[in-house]
Image (tube, one colour):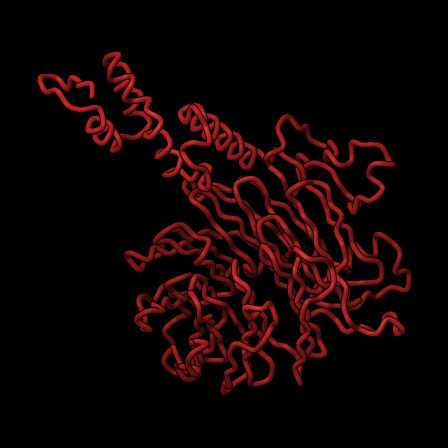
Length: 490
């Protein structure tokens, strides 16, 4: 092999590449200016492929997919910079997903740009916001069709990459496989109302809580859905989440009043946390930890806190915060490493540093309590009970923009290029006889908004790409509003 001159030492090429792999992109650029030989090493495909993987660009690609990984890295960096600029300047497109006549929005969930919504009419609808070609099919149910308008309300909806799940007020549960069609692949019935519903993010595990029972469902090797585990708890379940990446046996976390249960499919229900008279107010889980808010009551008032438990050791690792208000939402799984974001009834959003057990940042964002929250490596998106969605650059402690709607924000989900928000009403009854009136529906039905920030060179007040076609080509479109961001929307 050719020897590479490192000052007065001759090194093999492969050894030189191994040394250069510890450099970042700026240092590689400087090294490329030293000599022709160093330039060849600094532009080696292996080095730039590793940089792309470290920065999260094209994680599913192999080194043989592209011939110039340095150019791919530059393009990915430019696109990331463009998206961040569009987020900050509100440059993009927003669309309001079409409502269902004579129905009020009950629950909304999304996964990777696919949105599912349940209504008081019993309808369940799905949108794919990744293509701007919104067919928005209705997922069929197995209720009797000879009784129109008599279907029970939808209590909860959940969705992941392959499954959609809906729980109804009468205790029924429907599961759809999005890859096979709109007919349910399984139907399960509880004797009482379903109080909590959870769906694994990537797997095929569904957990429900009804009365004092928690049931975990999963398909067998032949594809038939069956009960994987069943647990009995002492109180009614308030929150329920499935722990990701647990292997063969599913694991769930359930909160019931002041009790927190660890539910493993091969074991009986175990109490993870219990302090009498201190109810749990919110819950989130990651692969290794669980975080939940605890309300402090009684003679000895210690302030409301968020407790972080290790799922492996089954013990408390951190007690975070000391707030007067109740913690209403916490996001652990989507937050950057060693950080966690929470919302509180005192109208403040807090970033917790799990390494020091301290509050890294506390900002006042809403007029009422915070109802939904998510963060990434530079921004926070929060929703409030007053209907306000706020976007903050928390590194600069600066509010970027905000949008207001009538109803409380119950769902927020975003990635680098899109944002999904849902405003769900408190009341599920339209107090007007003119149910077909658009103003009435806008006031009472609830709203779902899809924001797209990857739209380049899109002026304000411009329609979405799907609405630029002729009426014939968009006859199947399910949008009633497709305008870009108002310049001074509040």
